[in-house]
Image (cartoon, rainbow, N blue to C red; front, side, top):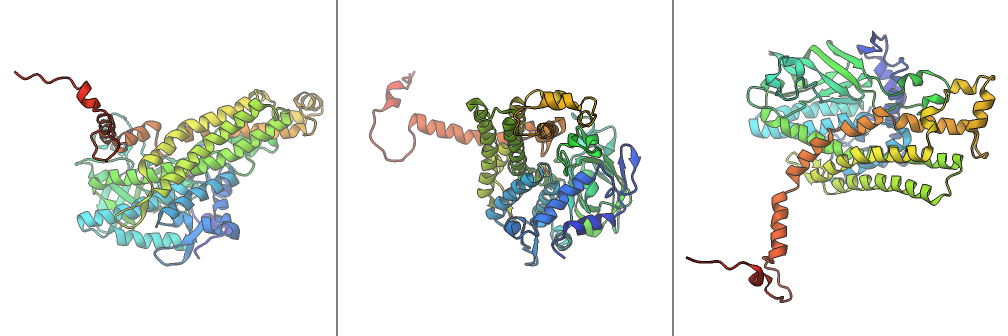
Length: 501
Ligand code: SF4
């Protein structure tokens, strides 16, 4: 079965014995826990849309391994068109859910592992690539929800993995066995892991000689012995447990349901190990993953912004400000920032190029530019939404005030605005805007797929500043050989005379 239905996804999760702590307590079933439900609903939407004919071209494709129809979330990018379709898929899903739908980390991790396992084999004569292809075929056949796990706790930030007082601050191999390895450590900010079938563990940083134990990439079932999830909190998450209009995004999460995942001496059999000690290839693995994932944000955050722009535009109608030209201009600014970032993501995909293994990489400097812009544009779009919606976002009473007959008359009367709209529409849309522009969403836009400085460092390396200096020299001194109109010899007039002794 290559395309699971939403029900099959949820049922298959139910069969797993995932060890998870939520609110500090071990839970019996993550599937039935109300804190996880919004995140499961979001992933279920990725499965649902793959069965809708109108979206089939964007949501599904043919496997390059088997020729069978598969979900695009398990696909290895075969062309620039594949990269573009991925961005279109993310925009669509962002519009449908208004939040993070979690599967892209696993997708980009699959692609990074596919490419690097090939390169390691070329370099070292290993057989990781064939091994990984077998695992990939399994993921495609079962249409698995895969969480990528990259970010190590990192301990003292000024120290390398091998210099840490606590060697477990980066996931490492603590035992090499004839039939596999035992890994220990943790990964943070793990998106969607708690409602995944599998975790693809990758190194989170480049490594140096002496750090071979940290050069480990492998696939671990989410319910493997020794895997423990400790669920994170999101802004206003307890409102999801309430009835009424304070929920915000009614069915879906605020962001991706992130958790700390602990690997408490987890055994990984050899057929699931795809890198083991090859330090020279870790930086490339991180780089490939980050480049693909940074371009994604122009798609997913674009779709999320579409929903926020819609909610904000409707709010201006509820308030009666929608005909004001300044209000319209602020909405246009929100659209402009959304489309600019989306255009960069599409552009980085269109300029994709072939890697040695035959798959396609997105244009690196454009991908980093997308993510750098997201760290600003999501805040600015949120700021404009706050500006247009007004201060009541931060001061309105909870939904129970509207249910209490002693005060309901007053709150309804004094929160009323344009009489064409019921006052509860104002409250409901206000709560959505408040929820989806809260701290968690902003921090995710800032640090997801790497913090802003990581993109700037990458861009400095990719910007070819020396090449740009050469361009400037050529233009200013006119040193190229291209024939053109004869002009006065500016150089001869301005160059200082060279004195000879
Ligand atoms: Fe996908 Fe965006 Fe969530 Fe990353 S932040 S997993 S790209 S939806």
